[in-house]
Length: 136
Image (tube, rainbow, N blue to C red):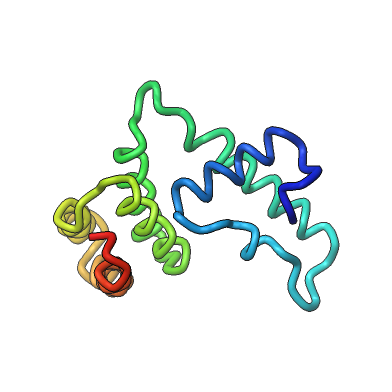
C-alpha cells in the first residue's frame, strides 16, 4: 500500500494518519498471510474515511477534542489496540497525560471501573513509551 500512484485523496489520508500517529500507517495496511485480496479494499476505505474525511474536520471540533473523543470511544468499546493508537494521536496532538487521566475518571463514572482500568493499563504503557521517546 505505497503512496506512490495512490489516488490523491488516499494519499492525503495516509499523510494525515502519519501526522497524527507520528509513524507511517502503511506498515499496518499491508496484506498479511491468509488475507484475501479484498482486505486491501477494506483497509483503503477505512483509512480514507477515518483519516481523509473525519480527522480533518476541524471547523467545529479541534484535533485535541477529536482525539479525546476517540480515546473515550476506544476505551469504552474495549478495543485496546485501537486505543493505543488513539492515545498516541492524543499525545502527539498536545493532549496532556493529565487530561487523558481525567477522561479515564469520567469513563469510570459512566462505563464502569473494570472498563476504565482495562483501558488505563494501555494508557500507562503509552505514557511510558512517550517518556522513553521524550514526547511527554
